[in-house]
Length: 97
Image (cartoon, rainbow, N blue to C red; front, side):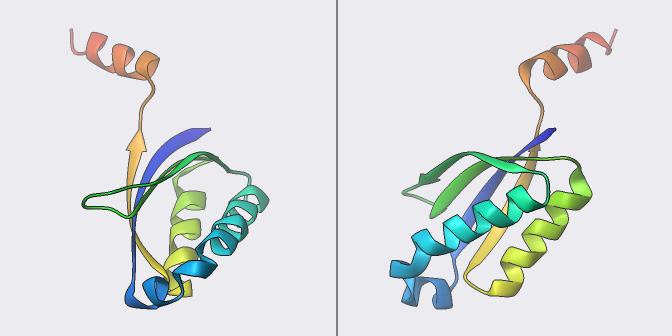
């Protein structure tokens, strides 16, 4: 499984219906699970982003599809970063020679 950091901001639509946000999170969690992925952590944040999630997905295509489904719902905008765990980081750095 590949790990991704998903940075999210509410759209105007999402902010207007913020009280429904926990239900939308539950639906997103189920949707990603049905696609073979999972939420590892979720945070409400203060600052540049409203929410941050750490998720896993089988591959980039699955996460891209999930992100597009979130965007199509119109409640959040996302920025996604692929995350390499420490062992992969060490392998990448070691491979530099």
